[in-house]
Length: 234
Image (cartoon, rainbow, N blue to C red; front, side, top):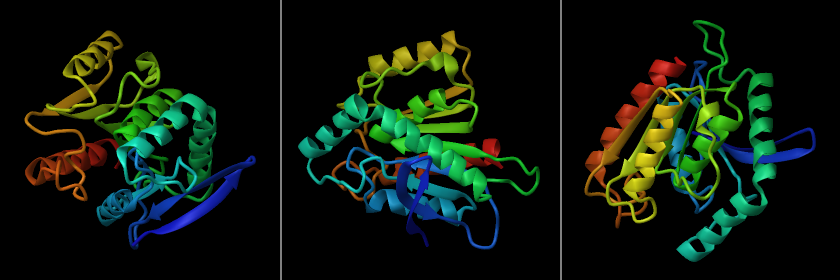
């Protein structure tokens, strides 16, 4: 359904996987990948969004690099947040400009440009971070098990409604950090909901990882995510 594309804006090179709905115009969802990079699972997620009437773009923040083992994946993620954050910011800005210029993400009923963001693990962190950095552009945010300690997130800047997804037995994200994030949302009067699925681990949505995948909860959170984006983007 989707295809790999590349484009350039103001000297910034961007590549990623674009999936578009057939025969209709719909809102845009920017999908941020896990620490593995832009792998087949993220592409399949983009295809699933397209099948429900959304344009979906899986941005490649690693420049074509992917990982299959946790050590390498961690190195790529640390490099992104510690050394390449400004580059990633420019890439996201270029994406927004590209979508607007190419009439992607405009809803026929109102003619408005409607952009949402979602992502998993590393991508969940990006959803929070860029939802604050480019608060004027994003209309809805769905971060899945975002990491709160790897990069500063300015909750005071976020304007979009948020649906944050977490796993109760997440070895990477203690529930104490989730509680702090809820407190930040309270302090800044964010329109935020937190879903915590008890008894499952980090990446329970990822059906390419049978050791952590939970079919029932993955199906449930997908339906809730679609409902959230349908409400706020369509």
